[in-house]
Image 1 (cartoon, rainbow over the protein chains, first blue to last red):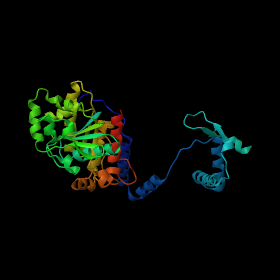
Image 2: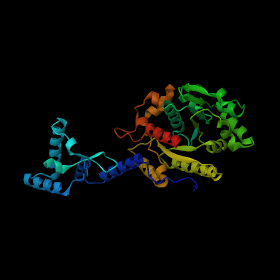
Image 3: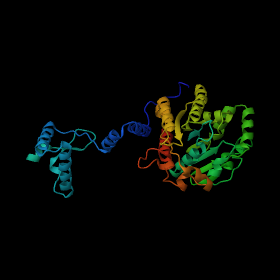
Image 4: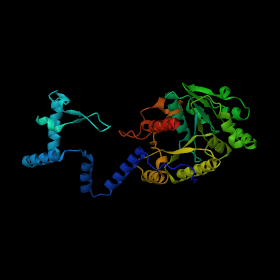
Length: 116
Length: 253
């Protein structure tokens, strides 16, 4: 092949997605039945990574321990409750907003203002 | 004006379906598009519900103008139809003074935003002439070893054209993609390992793509929600809709 034809090294994200799906399927079919079921459940879980202040993380850990639930379960519950309050208009974010230095977002929410 | 060639010397890989679908897709996005049939089978006209005609023959041998020969088939979409006389046109090209420049010369004053050249499954002088006229080449390929070998052949021809100082980009369009077949995935992986970002998302195998020409309709008209257009299931990652998006990016480059 001619070297003058420009080389595009980055794989098209959609193509990468298809190949990854095929690879996942291949891994699944080569597993024993019991592991396959667990892997399917794991894949169905929706995992996200969030930036939380360390002290908030510690508080969540303590409450989760006290209530004998997982931190994920506790966060899901509290977030759900908070979202309902927000949607009902019981929480107004405006007083907690400060201009963000990050170019991607307009504001950042000040957690320490919650106690004021 | 951008000129895009759809080429693979292997037959039955979806060249004409891709050419017709992309040309009408571009026309629907308001790009004034000319689709030129360089295949003596004349299937471009057939696929769009028009009559086969010696359009290319008239352009090359009788030296008629594009305006005289072009057939208006849809809003923003004209075609230069082909028929078996395209074969005679090839002979004229061979004995002309500058055979590899004949299409560049004919198309240089074409009043369109995009010209799509649908090549015959062969590597002949018309093929080289089309590559010389083109800005971009889309190489449809089935995901089997023989069709993938056809990709290498087209790339060799492109290499020769590039050596003459012509700038040419390309993309590989996997067609007849069957996600349940192991060989399909193996071949797609091999293509991606070799050609990396040149590989576009594949077109799923879809009966609608075979049915649409029988009604003289493009896929956008016949079944715009079909897997061939929209991809599989909920993951709208493949299909001609995504190919069209990437083609528009090429045109705007």
